Length: 169
Image (cartoon, rainbow, N blue to C red; front, side):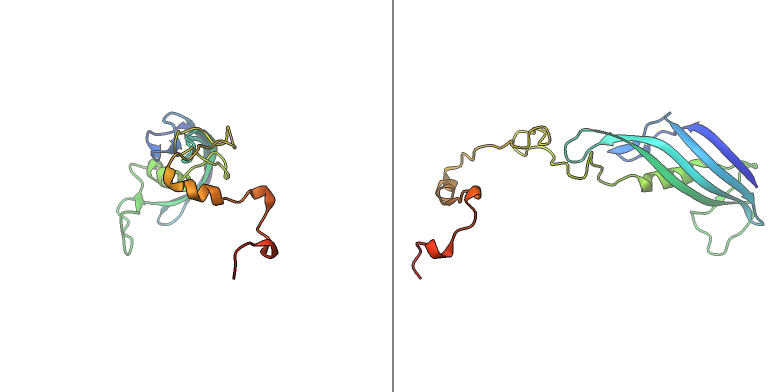
C-alpha cells in the first residue's frame, strides 16, 4: 500500500458548458494505491475549484468541488467476466487517472448551478438582475388587461369580507 499526495494541473474540458474546473487549475489528490491480485486499487479524494455561471442571473460562480475516487486498474492481459468499456488497465506500470477523475468531477458538478438557492434571476422584459432591485417591475401596457387591473384587490387590505360582499346571491 502506498499513500500519495499530489497537486496536479487540471486537464482541459473538466466540466460542462456552464461550470467546470479551468484547465491548468490546481487539483489536489490524496490517493491510496493498494496492490490486489487483479491489479491496483486506487481510492481517495480529489479537490479543486470550479468556475461557472448562475443559470438564473448569469453571475459568476466560484465553488470548491471535492470528489471520491475508487477504481481498479487491472494488470495487462487480465480478463474480467462481463468485461465492458468501464474496465481500466495499467499501461506500462502506469495509471491514467484522467478518465476516472473526469467521470467523478463532471458527475459531482451541479447540472443547473445557481449563485444562491433563492436567486430570483433576471427580469424577463429587460434583463435586469432582480437580486439587485427586489421591487423591480414594469407597468403592463396591454389595454386588454385594463378591466382586470380595476378589479385588483389591494394586498394590504387582505381578503374580501363575505359579509360586506355587494354581490347578490
